[in-house]
Length: 332
Ligand code: NAD
Ligand code: UDP
View 1 (cartoon, rainbow, N blue to C red):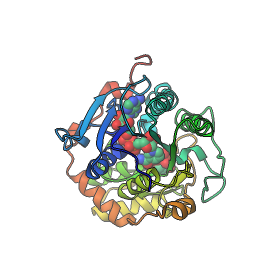
View 2 (cartoon, helix red, strand yellow):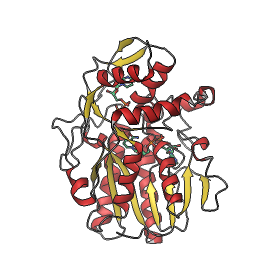
View 3 (cartoon, rainbow, N blue to C red):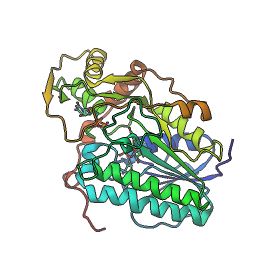
C-alpha cells in the first residue's frame, strides 16, 4: 500500500462526498485542509470537525491558484447535480479546467499525489452497457450538460498528459451516481428530490417515462474506494470506474422510496431534460481486480440511512439563496 503522506488537501471538502472523505481522513490520523467556496457545500457538513487540531478550512475558489504545503490532494471541488452545475455553466467549466490546472501546479510544486473525481458523465448518453473504462463515450459537446461533461473530460486530458510526462502521481476515479446523508436536499438530484418529496407528501417528479436507468452507490462504499485507489499501486493512475453495478429504473427507485417512507405521494410525469442519459451502469471489473473493491451496501440499507438523515434536516436552513440560483458573478 502506498503511503499518501500526512498533510492532505480536500477541495470541495464541505460538499456531500468531500465532507465524508474529510471524516475518513481525520479518523485515519491525517492532517486535513478543506478548501471550498461554499457554492453547493455547507459548513454544517464539517461543523463537527471544526476545532479539531488536525482539521482546517480555507474559503477559496479553485479557479484561482493557491499555495499550500501538502503531501496529497483530493480534488473534489465541482458542483455535481445537473441543476447546480447548469446554474452557472461557465463557472462550472472553469472549475473543472482552471481548477485542475491549479491543482496540477500545486501537486507538482509539492511532489504530491493528485486524486481527481471524474465522472460517469464522461460517457455521456452511452450506447454500450455496462460502461467499461475503455468506452470513449457519447457526449454532446454543446448541450446544457457539456459544461460539466466536457469540463471533466478536459481535466482527464490534462491529467494523463502530466502523467505521461512523469510530472505528478495521479489517481483518477470515474464516479457513478452516489447518494447518502449530506446530499443537498435541494440539489435536484433524483434521490434527494424523491426523499424530500415523499417526506413532505408532495408529488414525486418522474422526468420522462421513468424507464431510464441509473446505478446508485452508497457514499461509504465510494469513500472506501477513494482510499483504496489513493493508496493503491503506482501503476494504476486510472481512470477507474467506481459505482454500484446494480442498475434500476427511476420508476423502481420512486416505488422503493415511497414504500420506505410510507408516503402517499403521487408519481407525476415531467419532461425529460435535454441530453439526459437513458442508461448508466458501471463495469467495475478493474476496481475489483486491482483494488479488491466492490460496493457492499444494498439499496434498502442505503436509502434507509439517507432517509434518516433527511428526517433530521431543518429544510429552512437549506433553501437555496437567490444569488445561488442566479449563479456567482462570471469574473471573481
Ligand atoms: P457537492 O456539490 O456536494 O460538492 C462539491 C463541493 O465543491 C461543494 O462543497 C462546493 O461548494 C465545492 N465547490 C464547487 N465549485 C468550487 C470551486 N470552484 N472552488 C472551490 N470549491 C468549489 O457534490 P458531490 O456530490 O460531493 O461531488 C463531489 C465531486 O465528485 C465533484 O467533483 C463531482 O463532479 C464528483 N462526482 C460526484 C458524483 C455523485 O454522484 N455524487 C458523481 C460523479 C462525480
Ligand atoms: N430525475 C427524475 N426526477 C427528479 C430528478 C431526477 O426523474 O426529480 C431523473 C433524471 O432525469 C435522470 C435521473 O433521475 O434521468 C438521475 O438524475 P440525477 O439528477 O440524480 O443524476 P444524473 O442525471 O446526473 O445521473
